[in-house]
Length: 253
Image (cartoon, rainbow, N blue to C red):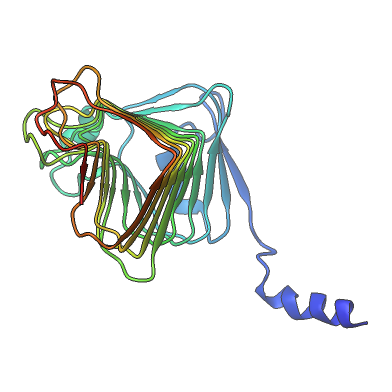
């Protein structure tokens, strides 16, 4: 009887109206931008394999959204001239304003914007979770803003070749600003360009575990840069720095 009562107490808070949408090149929705205005809190977006080229910037404003691609053949979100010439709102391929959003199995590449901070993902909402995604050849892989009571979780992702020769030293593979907690584990972050860091975080607490963090062929800066100190656990990582690096520090704290 107690279990049944507990179940009915939970019902008003469950998301019984959650819906799912599918993006595909032969479907009604052929780009992410065509579906984002239709989603509501708790919905799921499935993205079929393929190349999604030169879409407009996509903003996710609802909470508890799940965006998921094919695990074995990840869909590619490739930025082009539309985002590169967006002087009104150009931030990157995807701007996430909602809370508790999950992004899984997507590739973000070639983000360029007028202010040289074009990100695969610009995080403007709390408690983002990224799993099994790839960020390559963007001006910024992921860029997270400053928020209190906020945790960002990044697992099994790959960041490679992000940075900007037009603004050297200010763009990075991963850039997490003033939040409470960063969980960064089981990732690869490699070869940031133009004196960018492989991982830069200003979070109060950083748990950086079991990653491959390296520079072998680009002029990067630090492998890990924790600019504002705080608490940090760095454990089980493989960290490599080549003689091309512009900074002799592997870890800055």
